[in-house]
Length: 80
Image 1 (cartoon, one colour):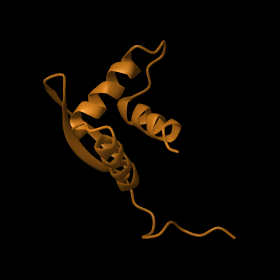
Image 2: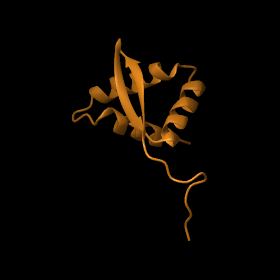
Image 3: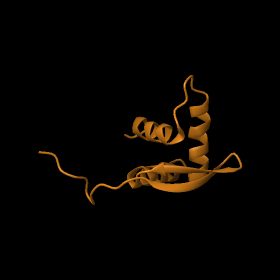
């Protein structure tokens, strides 16, 4: 039988980040914010710089997803 995550389920939290000189709001679940912060520390980047790099990759895609989806996908593909 499966169980709920430690601490329970949590809905998205909206945060504002500056990308390329402009503010944008991103809604992610707390677990994704924590994973992004951990990745930023691991890569020695400010959180906003990591998000900006992922955004730059995202907009070059043939059919770019929204930024929140791109962040989740990047985190999933870079977890290990």
